[in-house]
Amino acid sequence: MLRLVLDTNIWLDWLVFADPGVMPIRDAVAGARATVYIDARCEAELERVLAYDLGKHSIDAAAQAAALASCRRAALRIEATVPEALCVQLPVCRDPDDQKFLEAALAARADFLVTKDQALLELARRVREFRILTPAQFGGL
Image (cartoon, rainbow, N blue to C red):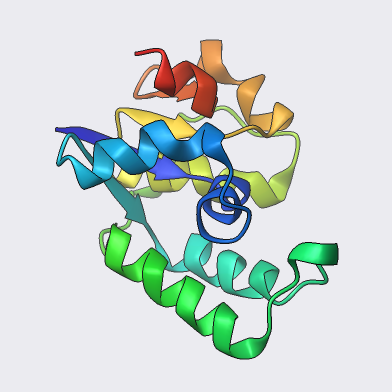
């Protein structure tokens, strides 16, 4: 079973935008070929972003709560923290707000961190513990 961590934009694609690009991820989870993991910091960011003005995709408070509940049903919570000695071995993301996704992937012992974020994708060759890839790359596995 594959172990995945999704960044916030991938969660939005799944929960709000119904982006067909994340269907391979959804299908893998539904087919018990993958498990998604999320930690408290990543979930808090998702909750915050769900309340943003997303243009025509903005959702009201009830839909935000429903989206967050869907996330919680789809993902297993990462309760363990990674020792600082291991965190410092990760490359530093140029966007400090994205470092939490690297740390979550490490804590989850993830196979893949799925993202479209360029700051994270730039680190793909520098991370040994898991692969960083786009939804399209995941779909091509």
